Image 1: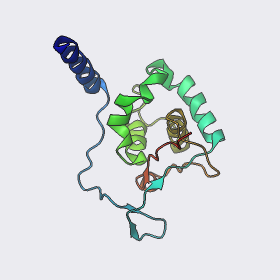
Image 2 (image 1 turned 90 degrees about the vertical axis):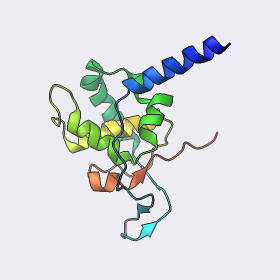
Image 3 (image 1 turned 45 degrees about the vertical axis):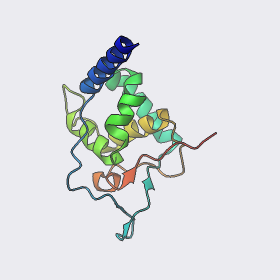
Image 4 (image 1 turned 30 degrees about the vertical axis):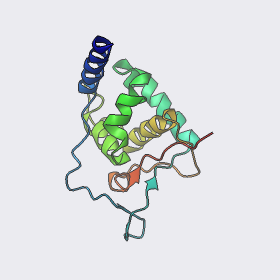
Length: 149
C-alpha cells in the first residue's frame, strides 16, 4: 500500500512538472476589478459564446493539435496549473508562446477563441457575450466553477 502511494505521488509530481508553469501571481491583487474600475471581491466570470468556442475548437484542431492533445487542457493538472489564476494569464501565455514554431502568429481573436474552447471543455457554460481578446480585460476574469447538475 505504501509503495502504491509513493508511486502515485511520483507520477502526479512528474506530470505536474511537465505541465507548462503558470505565470507568477506576485503583484496581482486578490480582488478583481469590475467594469467601472472600482475594487470588488466578487469574481468576474469568464463569459464566451458557443460560436466563439466552436471557432476555438477549429483553431485548436488546425494549429494546436499538431503538438497538443485535447486532454492536455482539462483535468487535475490543467486545473492546478491554470484555473487558480485569472483567465488572462493563460491567454498571455498562449499568445506569447504558441504555436511554438511561430509564437504570436494567431490573431488576438483566435487566441481568445481557443481560450473559449478551453473554458467549454472544462465544463463552463456559454453565454451571450464573447470572451474579449484584450489581455487587460481577461486579467480581471476568473474561471468560474461549473454549475452543479
